Each structure stands twice: as C-alpha cells, then as structure tokens.
Image (cartoon, rainbow, N blue to C red; front, top):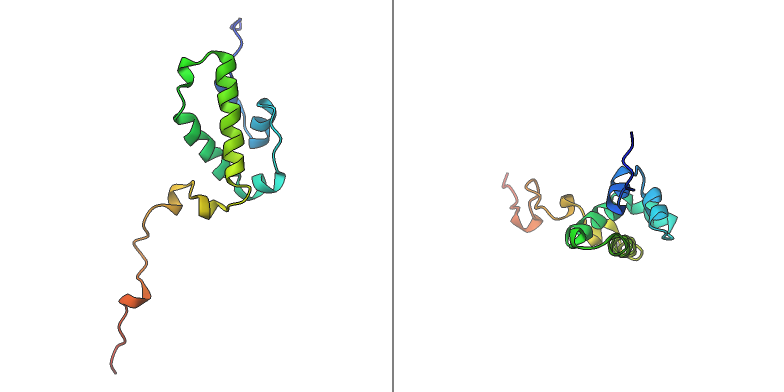
Length: 110
C-alpha cells in the first residue's frame, strides 16, 4: 500500500540523481556549460543556501519557491565565476599544510 499524500518538494529533490533532474523539477533553465564545469559546486552551494532557509516553517508552495530561488542563485554564482573563485567546497577554503612560501626559503651554502 502506498502513502496517499504526495511527497513534498524537498523529498522529491532528495530522490533525484542528477543536477539536470533538479532543474527540471523546479522548472528552471540552466546553462549546460556551467553545469559541465561546476556541477558539484552548484549542488553544494544549493545545499548551503537551503540549510539557511526555514523550510520546515513554509507551506509546500513556499518551500517550492524558496528551493527554486536557491537553485537559481546557486547556478548564477558560477555563471561568471569559477569554482575556485567561489570557494564552494572545503578544499578551496582549508589551509594547505604542505606549502611553504618562497620567501621562507634560504639558499644553502656549499
């Protein structure tokens, strides 16, 4: 027996397996070049934006509108900026312990 209540937009989003499916669900156009270049970054940024929203306090239409706006914003972040410039992933923000600035090097006398 199936549940008679339709799944909410957030449940449907969680069940999707591709960024393209997410854009289709939320009825948004996207730049294929942006997704090809920054797919993971766009989805990570979407998650960051959704985490900041009080989605549990919204009705279904409100949640849909907010999720749609968040996806549009996440996509737009990468239209003119690279993933490195946007620093959406932790790898771009954490300090790299294996790097030494050149000014810190001294020549060795032989």
